[in-house]
Length: 343
Length: 240
Image (cartoon, rainbow over all chains, first blue to last red; front, side):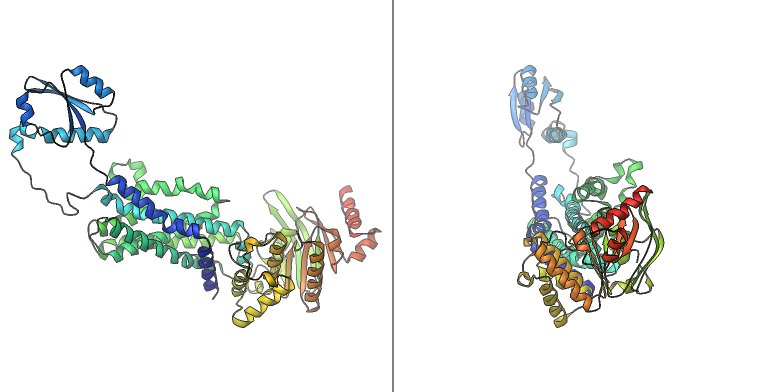
């Protein structure tokens, strides 16, 4: 009865605040779309200079997929490289390859030039050229884009980020406006306040999770090997941890600005430890942070479903961890409320 | 006896906010806590509603020690801040607070209309609180404390920002509640308002310097007004 009243009130407030509702529901879609466009953009076509290439070599080279400029002298090529008109140049001495010079300031361009070079000179080195290796993929495929791998993490991250911020600020407002004290001067129990918030906001996080997941998978065409239902379940569980963590941490902020300050401390580090960057490459003294962040478990579970196509048996451990986080945050929040009313 | 404050002290760190307060409040009276801001009035009433606990001493309400969840339903508390949900309408606010006290259906509807009538806001029932003026918010806040017909009303500066005409009508509301047998504790720093209380507690720097009816306090100090009486008591304290 009392919890129901609280839930109804939260829903009413939410529906009045159209802009916050839009931020929670539409903003993640907007950002996912932008990231999708950024990561799945066209392949970079390197601009390459060839200096003094003998005609027989030129004929054997595969110069597609690059913008080729021919130079008479090394000096001219060097000048164009310095002006960034070309990304690098190849110098020959007679029929033999002498060296490759790269402009070098952008690693991804360097990579593109080297990749092109290997393709282009395949036929110059006949011994290797003949060998065709057959590559099999256990998961994914050779046309899997970067977005497909990052996607599940991003999906989880943005669900987490917006729910954390909005629920945290709402609960903070309850405190700063004095309404929390008013609630505590009524027979409402402390646990009822926490449960009421979970249910009231839970409704909107459910809506958000459904929207984000279906948009990413069906509109943006993110790689999806497993069951949509599980993706929804994981996103929802993650949102719950965000909701409970947000309301808990709001107890340690005195105003909205201080709530925003939790973003670089609490939210951003999670992003790094969520498997976006391979944890094995992170220094040992830092990598232990991964397993204490909720996003780590959600990202792993989302990848198991979306990329690897596994089922419940692969994710239930991670799901339990997420449920554990939520429960822990809720209990801590009830304890934090003791500051306002001892009973 | 409805309220009994026994040897209550409160410290925040090294700062003494309340110093050994002893006070008893009778059932059915309007008791005023008078003192300048920062004197400790709010800290004291917050202890009575259970939002704070004393560092030393005990507070008893209805013969039981606070804080107690059982007693909360018998108290109506109006804080200094309005504590309303501004994005909701007055009606939605009251519906919510009424439900917290277990009011429902037609009884809830009836009570909402009654309290809105009392604070003279009936025609603004469906207005969003954002569009309320400061005085209207104060009255709505008062209305929300009356919803569940509490036996004891604790009102922290209830008439701040309310014009004299309306203040008069709100005080006549208080007298109505008193005739219904309710007890009211009102904090104020406005001296003329203090005259309207049955009994007064003068509080300054966390010390309860005098308790009595306005007439008694004036008589003992030979003052013409409560204000002079307050200064007389405060002055004595200053010399010590």
